[in-house]
Image 1: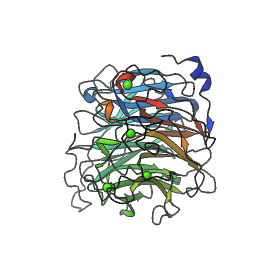
Image 2 (image 1 turned 180 degrees about the vertical axis):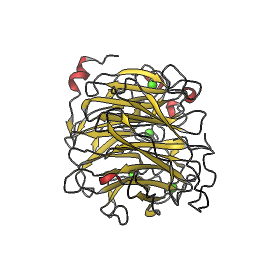
Image 3 (image 1 turned 45 degrees about the vertical axis):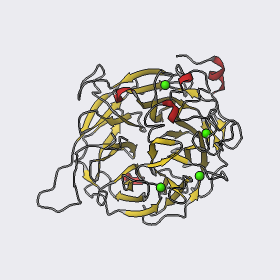
Image 4 (image 1 turned 60 degrees about the vertical axis):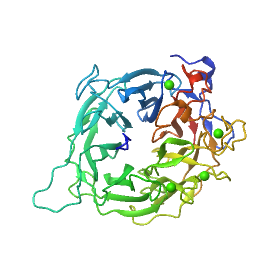
Length: 468
Ligand SMILES: [Ca+2]
Ligand SMILES: [Ca+2]
Ligand SMILES: [Ca+2]
Ligand SMILES: [Ca+2]
């Protein structure tokens, strides 16, 4: 997310140790440094190939000039990674890989056929690329550039004020034989999708739809439900340190002729579009809502989960991670369940949710400052309270009860000393398949001893495997 106007080989021990650790067992799972590169990496997307769960792909921002994206590809379940920089062209279609010029905001999704979709923001152009890989992330081709939706002649549709002055905050998802992209079109949110019938078999994207009532509603997510219906979530407003109202809209027939319906209110989070907390002092956080929709044949088929950050008292910096769910396509929502189980008042932020399509279970991960009391020790790098973060997570089979929280990162990070300018960025990454969660986060602890500029406290991208 741009949030305008602001504008190797691993040691044998690690290879042997990257075995999924059951949640709640108290042990911290073995961390792997995916990027191992000088400079800062942040804003990480991660996806697991359902046709070969040993195939995992990570794409992230790189700091220098926001020109190019880091990509890591693994074919051994995340133990070892090939690493490269992609999308370093000067304009659309440019560069050795044809991915053009990139700024940031990568989003990734594998589908049931093994197609890997990548979306990101160009540096210059106000369209959104969709790139497809049919070889597990080794190579990509841009198959579409999503443009401003056509204006229906003679109709008075949803407000489109300022549309496509810029594009921001795109997200790509798959499911039910479709791929969908949602993007902040400079005013309202826009969404489009395409039919997918097999590996490399992707139809044309439908003309982008304007999602009603979403002017200045952004930093959201999109999910595909049973039968191909689609839900968007976003947060109002896109600026400030308060507000942060969450709304969802549903397109009931997905790629069919019906558009998105009216927005439905979910929650007031007290987290504005740029809400500063000690652990994100340069970038701030937003409520960062995320969706996961159960398309399994299990007992909660049709249940859609939303995760978000809520600040208990506005400007208290006591942010917490909550989950609610809906069994009626967003019309009504369950009572909120607080996921983080600490007893203090420090910050939890930038959560991510993912649903395992083989079980219907959900995983939630987030950055967590619970162990930074400013008193030294493992959770505090500098004697200042609540400004250092670890990465934590929990699992649930129903959205109401969660496992005891699991510390995922072995180390403790301080985003500001990285000099990244955007701290850990705007989001974290999570994939969940076959009973194993694969989180991805920005980390400058150098707990693995593999960060080439770890002594300078630059950020690398870390991952691990956690059995849910
Ligand atoms: Ca606030
Ligand atoms: Ca808290
Ligand atoms: Ca501290
Ligand atoms: Ca680095």
